Image 1 (cartoon, rainbow, N blue to C red):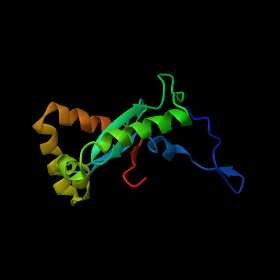
Image 2: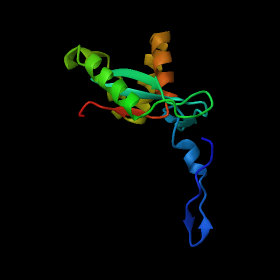
Image 3: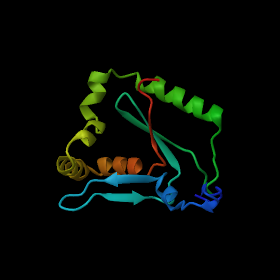
Length: 142
């Protein structure tokens, strides 16, 4: 985000690092009747964690873009998420799982996403949190 990484070089010449702008805080949003949009949130500062079909998130960057969690913080956060997520059995949490919709063909996923968003303001907010995340971490099998 701060563009402080030294560019990679090939045969002594710096390579273009422009694609790194879309490495974090980027999402591909399906569109109906047009190409999918790759949206990049330059203000992205949180990480979304999925466990047992449930979504959690935490702030990873401060307002100035500096890292605001250390390794121990992350371990504690992920442990708390795993503990909370196991309170409900998967057959219950899978009833509201959105992740499976992303496996649909693009047009069907775009239609489903629009239906989910139009169903409630909470759904729209949840997708905004996911779309605006630095990245999504799935910890089901760890």
